[in-house]
Amino acid sequence: MSTAPTKKDENIVWHQHAIDKAFRATLKNQKPAVLWFTGLSGAGKSTVAGALENRLAQLGYHTYLLDGDNVRHGLCSDLGFSAQDRRENIRRIGELAKLMADAGLIVLTAFISPHRAERQMVRELLPEGEFLEVFVNTTLEVCEQRDPKGLYKKARAGEIANFTGIDSEYEVPLQPEIDLPAGEQGIDALVELCVSELSQRGIIAPVSN
Image 1 (cartoon, rainbow, N blue to C red):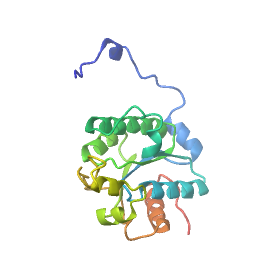
Image 2: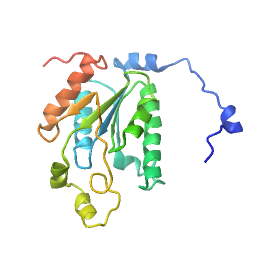
Image 3: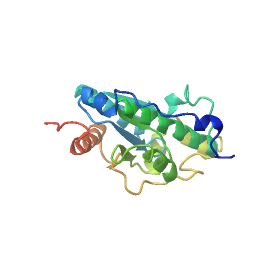
């Protein structure tokens, strides 16, 4: 497929509006950020991201949580699970997260996103310091024991092909901004680790215990 710009591409120019990201973020008393939760199926990505969103809401911050399964009901409902489709799924979510960050939001995403190159692709969409890779660090053994959707059982039985962690590789983050020991600590502790990191980075104000 050619990547040369089409005539339509050449005629599309980004329109800079008077109300910008900095203004929107100031209204919300926060800095925009994208927290990209990655990890194996069953690691606890959606659970931790949801609990963190609840905590941030209690603190008065403005967020939006993009969940892997949910976006496939609409935005990405036309995509399958081939390597090409999975990459396109991540690309679309990255672009959506970028727009939400432009709205001044703290965006939380929960996707396996198994390949470093795809996560790097999203990182490069955002300004320096605005993308935080959050590794929900849970071993395959623990994930398989949990198996909340029964997917590992199906994968082991050969009913699901190219399942991450079984017959498709998961590339562990090399230097995540936040490394959550999700197989060892409870949800509350993991959430507070995230809150502490967000506070240290100035995305939210310091939180008193």
